[in-house]
Image (cartoon, rainbow, N blue to C red; front, side, top):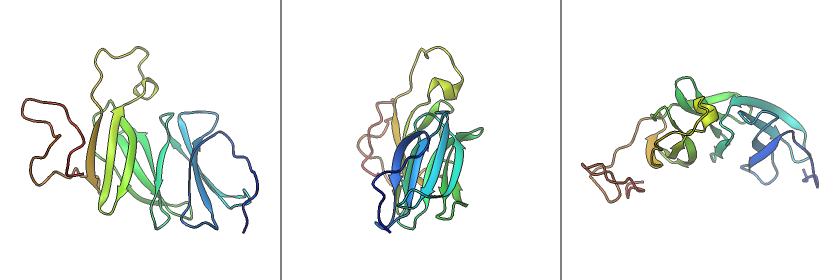
Length: 174
């Protein structure tokens, strides 16, 4: 299969992933509504194999694992989810990492045993607010198992919050 010189997809493309240079491609973006994530599987000629839509934040985040599972981050009524979309478009494993109500996933990395997640302030549209907040929580990075449980460091390390609530930097245990 050869790559078509150009093909179009609806909306705004934010990420493209594949596990094989001969395709297919899995595209993450959003359509006319920026608060809807659209995942599209296409072959290299641009033919759509399947498409899925998720609630979004206006900043779609996805990562592909070596087995071809695309992990997509999205909000739902109970918090934030990381859902695996299998190569055939069906739902794979899903995890709900613990977070504060005013946070959303800014970025995440797939690890052999889980995830490292960068948490940022959720957008006003997602929070349902019209005005700017008076205080903004600091961004933070946390590590989770594949089941969504926080992984705690074996011992206190540099960059962790201390007993006085000092700044949280990227911990050495990540």
